[in-house]
Amino acid sequence: MKKVRIYGTLGPACSAPEVLKQMLSEGLDGMRLNLSHTALEEAADLLEAYRSAADVCGVHPELLIDLQGPELRIGTLNKPVLLHAGDEIQADLLPFPEPVLRALSDAPIGQEILLDDGKLLLIKENADRLRVARGGVAESRKSVALPGYPIHSPAMTEADRRHIRLAKAYGVTGVMQPFVRGKADLLEVRSALNEADAQCIRLFAKIENTDGIAHLSELLPYCDEIVIARGDLGNAVPLWELPAAQKRIAKVCREAGRDFMIVTQMLDSMTHRPVPTRAEVSDVFNAVLDGASSVMLTGETASGEYPAAAVRYLVKTVREAEVYSI
Image 1 (tube, rainbow, N blue to C red):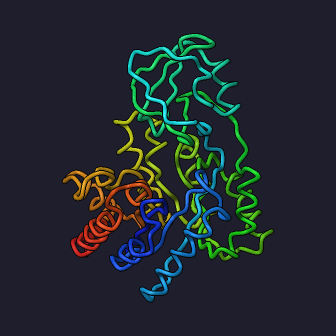
Image 2 (cartoon, helix red, strand yellow; image 1 turned 180 degrees about the vertical axis):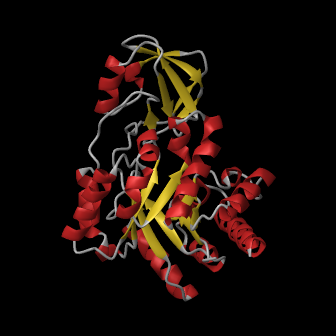
């Protein structure tokens, strides 16, 4: 079998050169930069630290950029907002994007609103008020989803197009397109890459909604790798159906010979703990046995307390799984 590629996510927790060197020394193949939270230009210092750490380690890691795409996120808050279960809040307490505000106006009473990959759950009470069904801390730029309610957004933002034009100059090796709904989304991104003379950059199609699942087979010829992005995918389908959805996507990819990545909460407990749970290492191990071409850490390295340790556990678990599957 091919060696499974291992990625982390760049962020404040791993911005120090020493931490980046530790992570690369553990066997990291590349890093992702989430452009929903920053811009290539704003991340110039972080990317320079990443390149410098790679030079010291004598490696040539990849750099993936995750576009904003049609993903919906709340805007910038002055400070995080604590929401208690049972509270009723004004809909304008949180800076929802315009497409979400329009949807909330038209959606039926009882419509669910999921925040931050489903960590928080709000329910529409009327045109102006929402009830907090599952509380927590609402933070800036976290995801918003209205399960079962279609919200149309363009495949790429103007910022996405600018980032694609800059990608080669920043050493980007892969572009991740979120919330892919059909081949038209991928063709639009591919066209932008061609216009930027960046045909060498790989295109990753993130499956995060039911449209992506339904059109999976038609997507395969138009991307280099499928991403089973379990955060928002776990909002689009009931959580107990998510493992079956992951297995079905993996099976389609295997049969078509298309590479696929599994991502989100691989070692989530390590955001605040120095060791993962037994369930998490089993999840990683089984991802490799299912044929994943790559796996990725997100918040564990971007904002977690133990980024290098998380990479170590991920690498060791993946390599053990590779030995077992031979």
